[in-house]
Amino acid sequence: MITIPITLQLTISAGGQVLQAEQSAPAPVPLSTNRKTPPAPGEFWEEEGGYYICTLPAIQHLPARHLIAAQVEFEDLTFGPRQEISGAFSHVDGLSNTMALLAADNDHPAAQKAFGYNCDGTSAWHLPSRLDMFMTYLYAPHLFKKEGWYWTSTQLSSYDAFVQDFETGGSYWSLKDSTFRVRPVRVIHL
Image 1 (cartoon, rainbow, N blue to C red):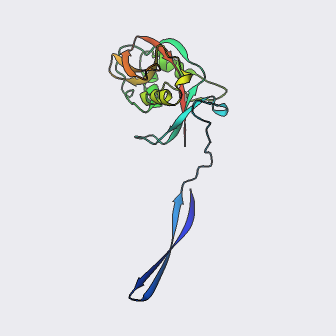
Image 2: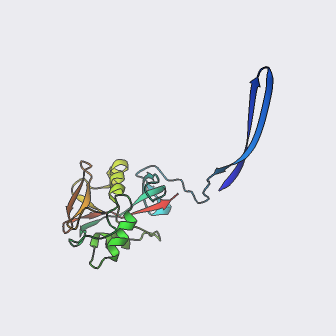
């Protein structure tokens, strides 16, 4: 954080008399030394190993962050067994959902595949949250297949988890033992 001094000068006229007051106060200005300028939405971000989608605002407990989609997608994966996983209900925090799924007793193929992805040394890929997948539909739908569905890391119940469609933009739920695509995502905090 850099502090910039600011001087305020106030001139008041009272009954023909001019009064002046001057006050200096520091004003905090956040400045990140590692802030990166992303390309346009849907364009490949070379040093980040994927396609820039958008910048998400700070929401709930998460800071503002850039959303990046992997270059690849994986076919025919199930979400996992019909089991409620504590900690995998967030509509905005895909990484926390993914970590909860990976920590569960049973296998969760969609989360495992997304988390296991690595591209040119970039890591921290995960199964996207429901919000992440909807933002990919809004900002870069041309990167995704129109037929079929993509898993999110957001579960609805012990039986269902949310999926995203890129033909109509719908976000629905499906049985966890159904097979759909997975497109890993990662975020860069601002």
